[in-house]
Image (cartoon, rainbow, N blue to C red):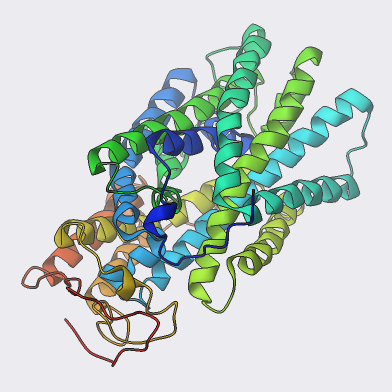
Amino acid sequence: MQIEQRGVDTIPEAERTSGPRDLISILLGSNLCLGVIVFGWLPVSFGLGLWPAVTSVLAGTVVGVIVTAPLALVSLRTATNLSTSSGAFFGVRGRLVGSIVGLLLSLGYTALTLWIGGDVMIGTLARLVGLPDGGAVHAAVYTVLAGCTVVAAVYGYRLLLRLSKALAIGMTLLLALGIVAYAGDFTAAPPPDTPYLLGSFWPTWLLSAVAAGLSGPIAFITLLGDYTRYMSPQRHSSRTVWWATCAGLLLGLLVPQLFGTFTALAARAGLDYAGPLVDTSPVWYLVPLFLAATAGSVGNAGLMLYSMGLDLDAIIPRATRTAATLVVAVVATAFVFLGHFAWDAQSAMTSFVLLLTAIGTPWAVITLMGHARCGGAYDPEALQVYNRRAKGGAYWYRAGWEPRATAAWTLGAVVGLSAVSTPLYEGPLLSLTGGVDCSFILSGLVGGVVYAALTATSKAAAPAADPAPASAPEPETAAS
């Protein structure tokens, strides 16, 4: 096992040896962790009982998978990550939009995973060995957990794949034990003194569908390419990869989230999840719960941190993937400390996922539309122009930016942020939607419609028949 040397450069065909089973394993194993499980607690904290919580999570996840899964096919064709691949539609500099969105998404979810995982570790150790619950203990546990995550992320894709395969089996067994452990305390009713967060049922149900359901697949809009770039289109068809992506996302998200809903109801977890989860656990389940908190957190946060390193590597081409990963690890750990010492868990989580969903959805819609327009045909060398600090190529457009895609994303993101409803912020367009958060629908719809209108009379940039070596700077050109 060696440290991965690849950043966001094109993966050679000889190294593209992963298959659909690997994709399912990494999407399933990496998501069986408390950082994903905690999203199943959100509907309960919003005041929803069993069936409203389950239906909202299920509906949001299915819609999200339908929108997100086709993105896996982009990197299958380009052999690089998704933010770099989006340069075909946003321009080789404009694809920084995708890199920044991906960096923020991964940053938030990495911090969340380390945060909740660390809190459960401390809670179980407090009951098992009497570990004191203080600021210094939290800081030490967060740091150790972050350190283990860094090791996995720095070694890269191959180690993370092996870890995910082991977690897919091990965490499934631990969660199955958890169902037995909490079954005796389970109730379908929401915790007492937990009213509907938005005042009535349907607005709260829709909020849950977005914050707990849709946000899961949306978190992968820039991550899927990190895995499918290692799959060869010569050996695996687009249909096979699409089905594997759908299966991996559905299993990898619904299993832990529904477990989170089940345990939240059993533990009467209204305002907090980690504390009641540990307090109501039978003594015999504390060790399995501790193992789930440690191993699962390292697997999930490792993949997120790996993606963050790739996105920062794409933003700063001079940085190596290893150096970029270490930098973002420090930032993510700082967010963990803020999450524990400065923020309210429910408000921070809900606001984060809703805001990021609002700005990420139009980017995903435009990328998918661009993939359809070009028929999956790309110029891999031209996609790497920015990374090689050169100019020109099929995707240079206007000084490296595609104005139409950038404008469409900007309008979609602005509309989405104006229609969002979070515990910390409410957009001005909410009065037009009856107070119901339709931000992801409106942002994706506006971004897609504007992009379609602006590109209706033009053809997609075609890859060169014999592309020039990307290592040599090309003359600056303008294309529309």
